[in-house]
Image (cartoon, rainbow, N blue to C red; front, side, top):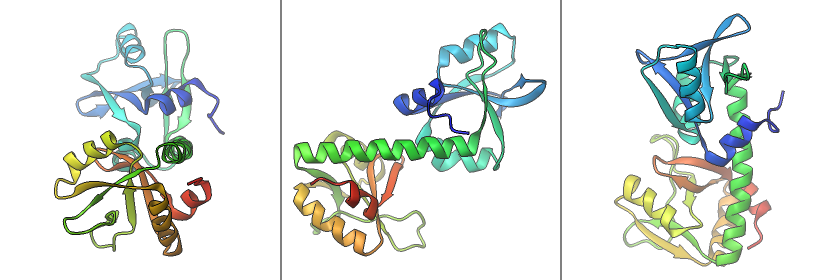
Length: 221
């Protein structure tokens, strides 16, 4: 079942975050149709109001970035098929969702939106930002695993976003920019080598990664 048209889905696409409550370092669970499930909300006020009105014990409400959750936390917290109640409130019992499948659907939609925004920005500004090592003139490649050969090229459409990631995660690198036509040539090479592109990564090296082929298909530069 797709939740694309639901309010919670749209909220996460816009704000790129949601909230869990925890107690004794465990996720707070609430009743839904007679069974206990972990609870999540897309609004902190809604979360606190529900928990306090229903006298649910909790230590804190935790704000979670959706990219960080999908990259680092989802597999540790949940198994395939696990369900979560989202946006339970005084006036609504919430919705029971398959957390793994719904997260995958959200990330797929975010990837689509971010790719279109990236292509639009590049076509408008005619510049692409990336990281390079001293003495080199091309953007660096990174990998998911230190044992693997780097195959992902991080790129940004805005200098400020790139600087935040460089300062936190790649202090040894320099920030450079190239014209969109130059990046287009590099993209062709990445596509031919079956490599990938990381679009507008956030600090912590999380965000959208798409195949060079996919980005090339969407590109207008």
